[in-house]
Each structure stands twice: as C-alpha cells, then as structure tokens.
Length: 433
Image (tube, rainbow, N blue to C red):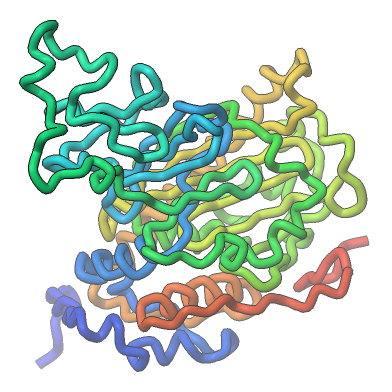
C-alpha cells in the first residue's frame, strides 16, 4: 500500500531532560562547515522556553533599556527579565540601583510598567499597605513616615516600632545587579554575577571612538512578533537573505560589502563598508555623521547581536537598537529605538532626518519580521528535524547557537573571535572594483 503523502505526521517527542544533555546538540557542536542547526524544539517547545528563561535570561546580563531613561535620581524604568519585574533607578547620590518590583510585606507589585519616576518625595511606596522604600532600597516605614497620607490623629495606630522581632533594616527591597555600557542599560538576575565587561569582551574597545554614552533615544516603536526570539536574532546576524528579503536595503548595504567583525565576547558581529548613499527608496543618510569619527568607523555600519536578545546597529550618523523580550516559545515583543549622537542635538534638520530614518528602518524591520514569522510556521512542522548550516554565511548563527547550548548544559564560557590584526575588512568576497 502506498503511504498517503498528506497524512498527518507525528509530533516531535518532547523530553525536557534531553535539553540539558550535551549529546542532544552533537550536530550543532560540529565545526560550522559540518554542523546542523539547533534542534527545532529550541524554537517551539514550552518546556525548552521555561528552561532557557532560567538558564539564559535569569543567569546573565540582558540589555533592557537606555541609560538616558535613568539619568537623574528618582527617574526609573520598570522592565521584565525572565518573567520577573525589575525596577531600575538612581538613588539620591546618582548611583544606579536595581530591585525586584516586589514589596517585602506581602509581595505587591510596587510600580507599574509605565512608571518613569519612583514616586512622591523620591520614594517607592507600596499601593497596598503603604510600606515605603528609599531609592537605595532601604525600608523607610511600615508605614509611619513623612507624606504617608495617614489620616491625622491616627499615626500611632500604624506605628510598628514596637513590633516584636521586626527590624525594618532587614526588609529592604531585594537587589538586582544593574550596569551600563554606552547608551545601553543592563540587568543581571544572578545572585553573584560576573562583571558586565566579561560578557562584552572587546566591544568597548571596538566602539571606543563613537562616544556611545552620549547618544540618546529619539524614536521608539513596538512590534509583536509571532516567532521565537532566537529566530529574530539569527535573521539579524546573517546577510545571506539580503538580496531576496530586502531589495531597498540592498541598495545601501550591498551584499558584497559585508564581512564578519567579531572578537572575544558574548556577541556576534558583522559590518558593511562602505555604507552607500540613499536611493530613491530611502537609506541611512538622514543625519550628519559624528564629526570625530575617522578611518573605517567613518564609512561603516556596525551590526552586533548582544547575547542573548539585543540587536545593535551603529552607523556614523545614528544607531538603531532592537530590544527583544521573549514572551513565549513562539512570541517575542520587540522594542525598536532610533538614537542620535550628541552633535545632532542642535541640528535644526534633525527631525526631518529622523522621520526618513524611522520610515526606512520600519520598512526593513517589517520585512524581517514577516520572514521570521514564516520561519516559525515552518519550524513548527513535525516534518522539519533541523537543517544544514551554510558555512559561508552562517558562522555567526553557529557561534550564537553554541552560546545557547553552553548555557543549557551548564558551561560558562566566552567564545573567542576572529583574529584582530588591524585589517579593516575580512570579507567572504573580494571588494568590487
């Protein structure tokens, strides 16, 4: 009897224990010229998603926002990392601090996601029973304190100073490690995190001349993506798809002008040199370039995927960042942010340039997300069991997927990068005449 080609295929078996077994990934551990892609369950399985959330997102540095959003005492952002809500603010001395968004009394969520200031008098107050905390995390009152809104004459009723076995010094907010690099803000949920510098590797040196700490966010958009966060990243870190998915982008970022650009660190990197001028479909001109850049920096686009979930595109005249927050195995919330360098602050033509850049990046990003969602649809088909890497163009994917595997199986290591011999380019193709 001939098999019915339209008969339903059996679902891929899911055994969560295999996700932490090194042997599960033997095909992806091979050298890139021999390797296959990460197992499909890594993009579709709820069990893998839960494990990845703990071993990747709750165990290392994650970019969550921008230093400019917490540029003064009391300013704050509320972010989500690995399913936890985190408050990032600056204390009265201007020191960056992070805390779990949880009251130490009965766990009430303290601040709403849209909060931009900690609260009245520069304090964080619980909306349930009015326990209040300073921006250094100290518990100030429970709730007898200045500005507590306790009805006049009833203060003694709320005084817990005589409570037995209770010292409010023991009930400060639960701390979270925070740090910055350039314009980016990072959170690390680990109990004893390694320095952010360990994860960044040589990126601070590579971007030293850009003065990234002075760049500021100017435009923001949010996209709801029906795909796994890793597919978003893997699409960003390769230019193999460029001619077919991005006809407009290909005119200003030519396929043959791309090359790998990465050293030791938890990232993948590529460049395009030179950045071509705008076409009738748009491009990256828009704003004047940073005048202090020289050499390759003055004519290159730098594209870095910061492990685990952030796309960083830095050009001589602007930057474009994608912060990707995994929501489920098949859903990612992406925040796209357009930033400008300090010389754009007083440029009267900057707003028009930003309009053009925002329009072009939105076009490119929607093209990417459309194809990424089609990949998610295909990878959920039980017939697909993994594919062969295209070694010429997909080394960054291989590097990234092996970072994921390392975390899943319990290895803590930072990958090496390409030799940095001072050359401006290491191309897969000769530069056209």
